Image 1 (tube, one colour):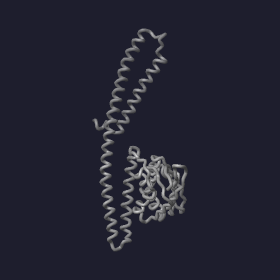
Image 2 (cartoon, rainbow, N blue to C red):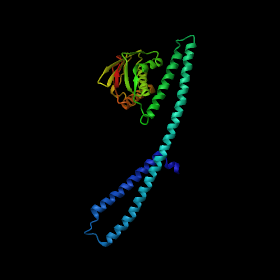
Image 3 (cartoon, rainbow, N blue to C red):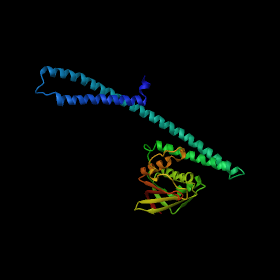
Image 4 (cartoon, rainbow, N blue to C red):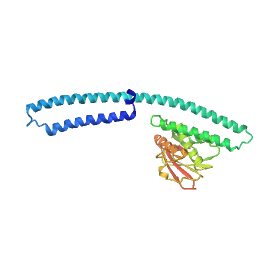
Length: 291
């Protein structure tokens, strides 16, 4: 019986019933006092009957408020404990999965180096799929912990970020116009640029990404990332604001949605511009300085 009451649909229904009942009873009291109970015309017998009515209704109202309040506290506490257990499970599970993915990717790279046919399309596709799986797992974890997680505010070198990303995207030529220091969380920034590069490779079939930087004010800069890919055919204004409806799980816009939310958490902003067969542009505004 208790397990049935703990179901989300049942808890929602009970909460609605409790709210409607208590609100209706309080509204009835308010109407009765203002419109029907006139001290100039009310007799002694009517006042005694009203007194008994208020005693019973007041007792029922207090019991309903007490029962509903205690139930809300209990359900909230149970949901909080359940949420903590789920977070612990996912953090442990994701750590094991990411370790396994890293080992699998390392073994695939070693196999690619040792094989006689180094340009085997099967091995390249395997490494690409492992890299995409790792990024999708990272995006899912970031989306789940985006509101609760704390982001650091540190000075991060753009050159160091793209140097590490060149190893993950060997098929992509990354050209950084000049060095700059941006203010934000290193892991979050790494995820932002990794998603943008993955978007260029996976959907745009790009081979080159150029990053230009300009100063907006004393402590803010704008990064313009442009690739030579196929561009985007759909509505650009929806990118980064919602998960797109698509039959292909790779093109639902989750990476760009997480990118926009991470940048907002770091007092940044991103916008996109694209035309078919003219490449894809990303304009990122962040706190930072040129070197």
